[in-house]
Amino acid sequence: MRHMLNPLDFSVEEIDQLLTLASDIEHNLPKYAHVCDGRKLATLFYEPSTRTRLSFESAMLSLGGSVLGFSSADSSSAAKGESVSDTIRTISCYADIAAMRHPKEGAALVASLASRIPVINAGDGGHQHPTQTLTDLMTIRSLTGRLGHMTIGLCGDLKFGRTVHSLINAMVRYPHIRFVLIAPDELRVPEYIREDVLKANHIDFKEVNNLDEAMPELDILYMTRVQRERFFNEEDYIRLKDCYILDRKKMKLAREDMYVLHPLPRVNEISTEVDSDPRAAYFKQVQYGVYVRMALIMTLLEVEKPC
Image (tube, rainbow, N blue to C red; front, side):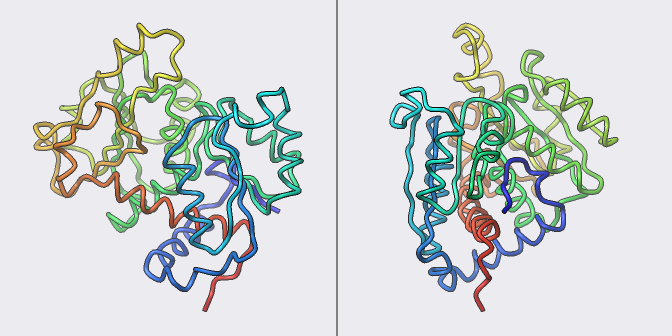
């Protein structure tokens, strides 16, 4: 039995196989409609979510399976003080696979150690978000035809953004990757990412404050929101929330073959006027997320690919 807690849980070769399966699902959706008949997915969401939770549910339903679960800690026995370990032991009696989001880092690992079913980390605090990373990888590969030999700009909340941390961890395994880390000083990438991931893997990167100056050199611009829920006080959040806003004027500085990604939800960091730009890929990203999660569910449940 395997879990997906971290993007590094799968080798580069296994991720390539998973993305190839996801691509086949994208182009041949009807043939996958019953591969998970009779299987159940439990969605254990201790934090609010729209895209990730509904994407998992859509994925399982599209495979012919069914879904059960809860969408907030208040609607689960966690409100009564039940531990994550006891919850997953209980859920293991009801479902075949579980997707869990939790505000505490390491919660998915704790669940996996007590579980009798595969556990997928759907986001744990500011730590990891592996299925978003798989979605990002599929989006980049589908749009550019490659997962190496590129410069990726990461912009916004690089300190608390788990999608950023996961993507960096995943992309350093591909050849000739370069990062431009665009953030205010207060939201720079954590020291452990800088030292233990980027420098340890001899990755070319630079840290800058100015988005305009970085735009012309990017193949991918990955925008993120400043997350109110990660701040200890409202003052700091208000001061930093609009530090970068991508608009039509800034897009004119970018190359014609650069793509804009965003894990969503957005607040003010991408103007709606950018949505009509053919380089805006964040809603395509959402669709790719369903195909990737379908492929991951099949892989963890060891479901055979239909002929």
